[in-house]
Length: 312
Length: 77
Image (tube, rainbow over all chains, first blue to last red; front, side, top):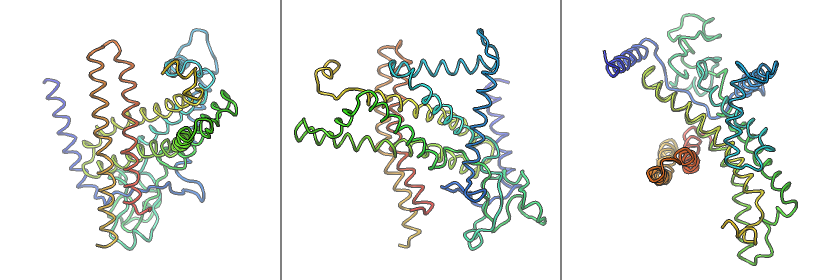
């Protein structure tokens, strides 16, 4: 059997299994929530996963550095390789400021990439609590995030028995226990503000109070003043750009996966899962790369002067 | 036209119109990158990295449209 035949057989088996799963486990409409839901009062599911990701990163860092050797082996080797690759990459963008800014950049990268990838783990969007919502009770809408929710006994639905649906009953909504932290606007806004403040910090540190001269330029005449105003606007436009880029990509990926699972389980979501792994990496990469690139722009002296002419 | 119908049309228009510009832009970016790789295959690594950064900038515009589409579609705004 050639490789191509094997792949075709595998795909056909997946499609058949998907159709069977679609018939055996009846589902309603896919339920998607833009905002993170509370699992405890004031404590959202994305905050919960955020804490889990933090613990994971801290434990990895602790285990890798517990017994450091000059010639690294095992976990220490892996972590060193990752950190070194990151450092070399940031250095290739901005050699001068990478050593000082690296802790923040690497933290952003690692936090964002594991937050993105956490959302792809099994159980996200399928394990949760059922509750009767007004929206679901009044309409015919059945709130079940995906077909696989039926395979995992929901803590409340199982106790009630006599269920035609294995997950939440008709008329109930699901509150997910897990949600990718970066699929929550609060988290991405916080990251965007941290990156923004850090960029401005470097601007003030390198140029002193003269950094404000970039934005409030009274020496260059009317044209210089208007250019300064545009600089100021584009500086602040970075916050929503950072925020929506990350949130939009990850949340759109989640919606895409839910819709694909809803259309045809097993076979259809598979390539999209691969795509989302790639997107998760690219977004983490872009967030940290843009931070260092903007730091590079911020520390540059005001353009149009003698030193500015040199590389124009 | 009731509110629900206009909401559906607005959702589709928001993402549909937002995807036009970035689509053209990403086409230009990749075309330029491929030409550059064709002229200078040794520089492939740097070109591909920078290509992705450019793509992400263009793609961000479509993502803004997508976020707005979601917000309209799920009735947040």
